[in-house]
Length: 599
Image 1 (cartoon, rainbow, N blue to C red):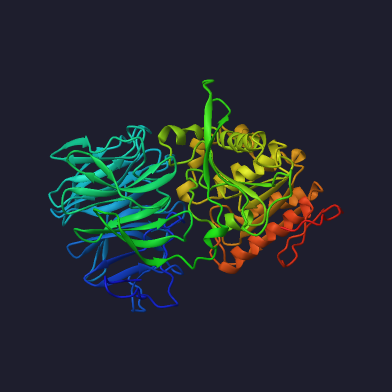
Image 2 (cartoon, one colour; image 1 turned 90 degrees about the vertical axis):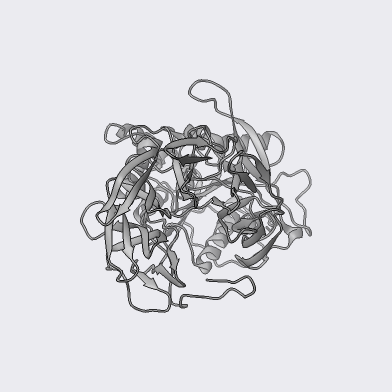
């Protein structure tokens, strides 16, 4: 898409195109622009194309993302799938006249952020197994020559340790290189000039985030010695301006709770993707000095009227102490049931949906979620848990999950329920746990290792950790080394924490949803857990969607899955949904009377 200050947004690519990269499977920025020409990664074959031209520019078998242009050359992350074994990731230079490419750097397992400087230097980020980019990365700078990159040096992030995550290099016009580092416990802004590095900001907030998708941009430089930044404090975002010399931060007004893709248009305005707790996410253009903004395009219509919205209330609650025995608290967002035309039964607390985000290095926000409002308008309370290991709370909170995935996240989910039950906000006998991917693993663990939950709603969750380690894609193939333990020496730990090995303790109902093209969590994982629960004689349902990958994108499938959840919980909790829902086949469902209540 493109838009001018005075014109309406219009499409550049054809309706049949799908501009989406599969580098790291999660992709990232799939296009770049040069001299009025936009080049993008086409999803179906992952080749690069020019908008409006049917001929591919690059050979089959390669994937591209995160391009930046300088002096007639595009610098990209390329992932080579033409060989057997692991794909090979590299920084490549693509000549925009003849579209020939050459490898500039392939000396690490992963690369990101190739950024050319005006004076002929190139900065980029690299890291190696078993680290993830939020664990440890290195920032490289080299000089571009006809022979390739010379004078290559690491200016931040020691590759021999896992103590610093460096992200988002950005060159200023004067040759200063800015970047984000969490060496002080939070992702703050630093600069490198004349061979010396110093901090620009020192705030207990994250100015960056975990690099799940390439091209992540959470700050941008202005032409007057400032930067516009996204500031994340306890998983809630805001916009601010930073004076690059003094480090002074001034907040911009705005009722946003989630912000991404921050950029600068000119000396007076910037742009971002922003979401609030009562409106759909939108691409906004805002004034750098006042914060006054306008919406360029929204992510959809306002499908939930404001008077129906249950806003998330931040809660902090006690949870299990750390390994050192020091008491800890965890965080969540609580959405009470809300409907302007109905109220709950007097003296009866509402049922609860416990949400677990994926990642697990990610976090939930208070941004408007129609799926959450689906539940709260039907009499359910929802708690969205930012368990230990979540981003948005600094490095120490993220590192709570090191070696303890399946323990800390589950303990925090149970602690959230116990807190809400103890404070009289929910019915502890009618609690369902819901999550996808890593959150789906916690769902399955919650049913296998606790008796806190009456039902589980599992979206492509991990049932067998060892199989995941063997079957998943390159980007996450060593993720579990940090979250659990290296293999093969840690095999006993994997077995102890894998729900598939503990089905004899799984007594709750389970519904599972899966995409048949999922490469991160292959369908066989879900099929195995469902078959095992079915064999245990527990209520179980399974829906597999054709053409879906790791995270559903087709509207009809998203809607069908959500309605199926409500139908399933109606059968398990004993109520009749007020919605007209197509039946869901449920195995092992015991006969029980339906109540007169509708939800």
